[in-house]
Image (cartoon, rainbow, N blue to C red; front, side, top):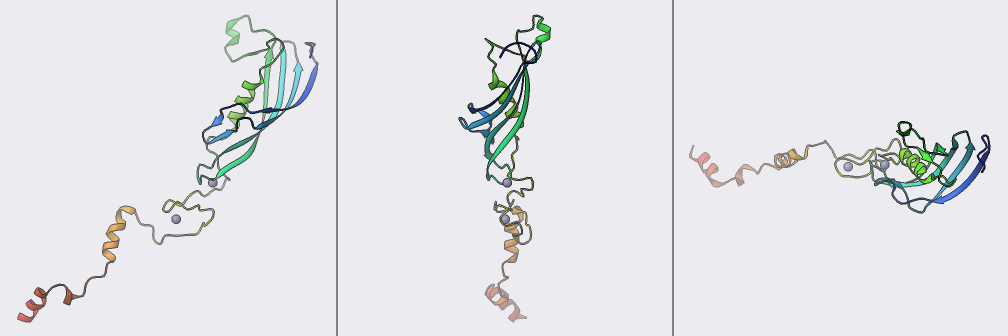
Length: 182
Ligand SMILES: [Zn+2]
Ligand SMILES: [Zn+2]
């Protein structure tokens, strides 16, 4: 592509995802295909790259631990300069400079996709998560109960309280003999 301002090209690319794109709980599998719609537009100081990426993201719902396998589609735009700014103060922000008329898309794509990936992925916006008492998936069985909610620290005590009181005649001969003396 020439450097004549106004020149424009569009591309449709499929590239394998790089490694470590995402977080522990949500990431793009390495080598999975990422589809990229890319438009390059020559402007005075460089090339403006605009496009969208569609990538597969796999992870785990942070509430119910169900696997998540979904598509993230994210737009991006980055200006690639023909030359690095001569004034270093202008280069405070991260600048992309064309090297041998090649542009480094990977960093831009990675940043865009990683930003778009939720840190706390959910299988669905209404995921009820797991039962705090038994760990069952509440989505499968939303109405299950465990009787009255009992603080586990009190459970043992209440079990003791529920034990049947032994009948009086089995508590020991002492009491019966006391009664008989009266
Ligand atoms: Zn979930
Ligand atoms: Zn439960």
